[in-house]
Image (cartoon, rainbow, N blue to C red; front, side, top):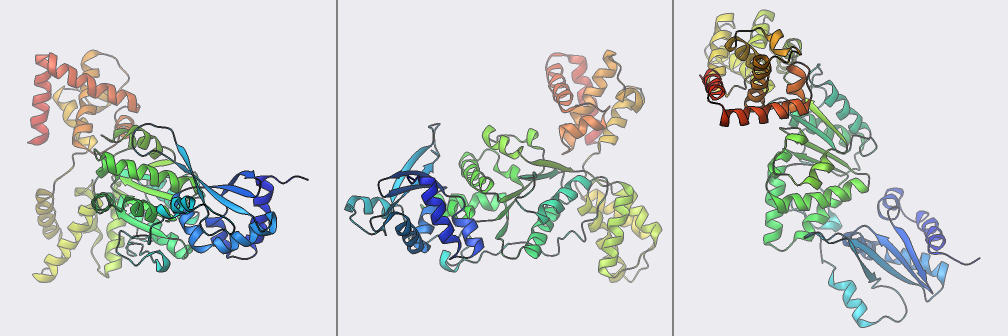
Length: 476
């Protein structure tokens, strides 16, 4: 029976599998595809130049033995690398590189081709020794875990998806997992919690948490030092990448481009990508369309401001962890008055405890009131959608139920559109969430409302007065 590239490679794999660690076999040999067998030369396609370099450095001997068993002493190996053109819109192209370590006759220029692309050492952006002794610190904060990320209606989907990803990274349909929501709602906490649980459950996996701002700085530095390939290769060896505040990539074309290629490599190889953002993908500005489409591949889960019961639970959990007792009526007072931000909630209770301790004052409702008033005054407060609907309804002398109703009467429609416009302007809530809270509308309706308000403001003097009056009420 005549040999094919596939049959030769499958026999080589059987031999290699018996002689190396299972994890190494899975990582470095399963992604390889046999593409052509010509005489005694087997061509195999590998995902990247980094892949080829690693095989040549660490596994060339076993490859040589396996191939010689199949094709004889004159066996030759050629790597085929499918390259995506980073700049411009050219189609992917392939580059053929012969194994520099094979036996038999080899032309000197072929050796030059193989060696020319070979970097002496992989640089780690975190200034950790080279790949031979590579140990990547996860940059995770172990205090941010699932145990102290309390579940409520506002975060149940995101938390459940996070647990699923932590139990089976890269093995769920939640890849990428994008967690989005306003400031102080726990996006970073949840991202760390996923990473911490993955490291606990799979210690051998390489997990890295990095803020998008730091990622961008590292990329710029790699371009300056001409180590862009090292930068890409480093991120391609991760099992789990957690990129925080992805909206920071807005307008940074070069950083988006390099992240696009890193994302593709990780996703194609079954690695997990976790992202956080202050906006839903559809609301992100100045992000390339091809990258935006990748962000929508998995699950986008929103964190919303916690309801009253969840706020109380968060405060009680914080007090329990700190070993502090506090009367329930004071806890409930804080929970009632700080509604939009978990960070503010915890900050207020820390301030209250500090004031009580330093001034040796008993924790009372009066002291809590003083702290909350000062805290809210000195904290940039995010206006809630409920508050916006109330202000707009009062201005147009209607109740909130009328504003949210299905009626198409012109003045009610305009009031509803203004509520949507100001909700988009003054909150970080997604368009879909704004629509669901203002009359159970969809994302497209909110987008249309915002455009209508902008158009009418520019062309209708009376309507512009509505906008100016309401703006003064919200900023006053």
